[in-house]
Image 1 (cartoon, helix red, strand yellow):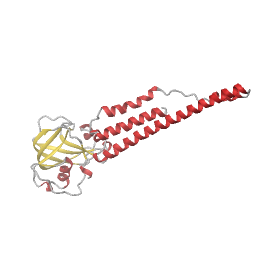
Image 2 (cartoon, helix red, strand yellow):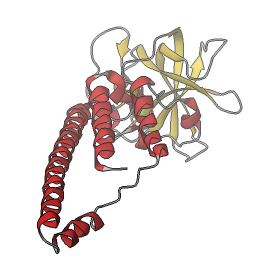
Image 3 (cartoon, one colour):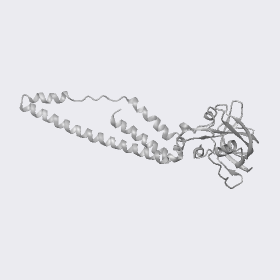
Image 4 (cartoon, one colour):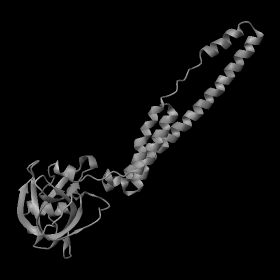
Length: 267
């Protein structure tokens, strides 16, 4: 692609990043704290594209002026002197033949329009069941917030249940939210995908379900579960990590949250 086409593609990339960063779309790719960097990178790319286009326009205008001057000089010399014809011929011999770029290269912009127009789904049960649980021991167990039931992130509950054996939960009723995953045997889990930086490094944290499990469960359905701690646990068949359980007393479907990823595990 020539410089002008490159500038157009660069501008579209910057525009796509700016659009994603100014909406919730960026949450499908990176953690919430990186929003300023996404917007800033998009602005930088758009600025670079405009600078490139301006430079190429200025350069082509200057080159056109020189070419006109050279052609005029060659013609005038040829009319007055015998050696002038040679000068004019040299100018034409030095003309640059520009080959048209293949039009198929413009297909590079299609993924950009897809990024702007189509929001990709967040990672779900398919990825969760093929990746081992990423549950880590918490650095501390802060006091539970007020409320009945007390609302905890799935990662917070799983860490307290697995590594503190539920002692910091104090027998309280708890509410957690996540999406459903069913393994090959039909065993249900409630899952949140935890990430360090971006969706590329997202890993699941899984909680097994017991108690009043809803009779019909669909993978990737988001549920808010109310219940209590249970000492039951199992090992993840993928990486042998600890999967604690949750004793359900009440379950209800909820919409997909604004940020489908859980960032609390590394905070």
